[in-house]
Image (tube, rainbow over all chains, first blue to last red; front, side):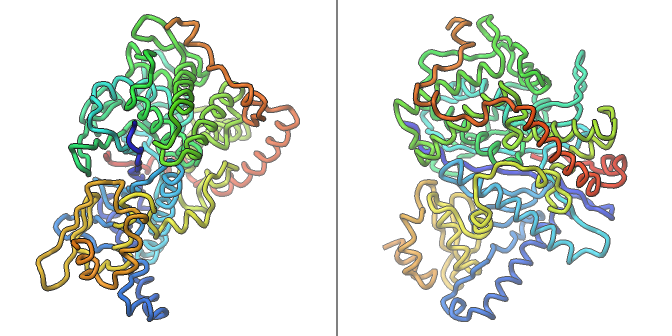
Amino acid sequence: MAVPKICGVETEYGIHHAGAEGNPVASSSLLVNAYISDLARVEWDFKDEMPANDARGFAREGALPPEVETHLVNTVLTNGARYYVDHAHPEFSTPECADPLELVRYDKAGEEVLRRSMAAARWLLPDPQAIVVYKNNSDGKGNSYGTHENYLMDRTVPFARIARSITPHFVTRQLYTGAGKVGTETSPAGRDVAFQLSQRSEFFEEEVGLETTLKRPIVNTRDEPHADPQRYRRFHVIVGDSNLAEVATFLKVGTTALVLALIEDDAFGGVDLTLANPVKAIHQVSYDLTLAEPLEMADGRTATAMELQWELYGLSRKYAEDRGLDCLGDDTVGREVLRRWEGVLNGLEADPATVAGQVDWVAKLQLLEAFRARHGLGWKDHRLSAVDLQYHDLRPERSLFVRLATDHLVERDRILAAVSEPPRRTRAYFRGQCLRRWASQVASANWDSLVFDLGTDPLRRVPMMDPLRGTAEHTEELLEGSFSVAELLTRLSG
Amino acid sequence: MAERELKRKPATTPREDKAPKETEAPVTSAQRDKLKAELDDLLDEIDEVLEENAEEFVRNYVQKGGE
């Protein structure tokens, strides 16, 4: 039986320092630091207003101070997320989530963290300087930055089987996970690309490999489980676009988790969807707005991306009927993945306009076509590239995405709560709660451990090698009953 | 597996066939008119919020690689 598909997404945001010749590393650090300083201020305010909490050592909105040994800012938030500077971008890694709907909630909470960071940075910068953040994956000039997904898998599943079986999904899921892009950055021979489905697809040049920044592979082989390596694999996915549409994020993670469960349980029933040339195919699918271009299969047949998606959907539905969908963290959420998957494929087939509220590339293309018609613009006009870019601007006053009527899966107040509170059904709960209560005594926090500094004793390390432990069910009572770190550690070792 | 099978949608169960599928229905002309009116309002708004110098805005957006 497939292990629960605990999942998380790491998002590198595009950054622009307006009104200054900002070095992107310095600007990204300033942005992240501004957020953390702002939290500290809030915490201090809380202390003034809620002395009872302070007396028990609670830090309501704490964050771990930046690690000083690296020059780049790196912090862990009370919601269990990691917020840091990676290369020249601010990056937000969601905490480990138990199901795809929870992931949507924390992905959106990440956007809110970035939005608050921009506001906090405004206070630190002289007018008219501002740091602006974009949730996209390309600057339109050949530079791409990533959105990486992570899924918990059983270590016993051979990697070669995972790579072979997941590739057709990675090549074709862009039909609904693509964020859309004006033009091309690789100028494929014989193609006139005015608009394509994906921001990222054309940057992929290999089928399988370890690289993430050049010669990018469709299947990434990074093996860094952040968990017990005997039992688990963290399958690291670099081939996706950042999505703003909630349904697109839900489907990106939900369908992928489901297909991975099928692979883990060997539930393809002999169906072989191997493509003759996956790299060529992933480019073809991105460039093909008709969604009907035949792709060459390894056995000599052809199939369209839509047909391959219907196959994967059919196999997944049969899997659900046979075994249920508890492996997605919640059977009801799993059923919703299937329902939405079928809906979006039907919609794309009938008329893509019907799924503009669910799929980023459709929403963006619709907007571009209308804008083009109104102003009589050709596809090379800079204003279309500006619309493309500004679709991803996270500032509410500038974002074009927020002006569109898209479907919402998570209530606004649940997203805002997720900015500071951790998910309850993974080890992120223990990490986040310890930081909420005892931030000043947490010497360092990582995905798979917490280190406490009690002042006198040696540092005390608490390993968290199982992402399924350290949940609210396991530790809420323990945490509620511990009034100090010392007491917590005594109870843990007792 | 034969190509014929590959191109066929998975058979839906009768229960699901009866269920309404909003997303499946093609947009009617009345709906299109309504969408167009909404889009016009949206375009007015976008004309207001779009960065003024598009060419400079797009040119200045340069990122270093990441990942």
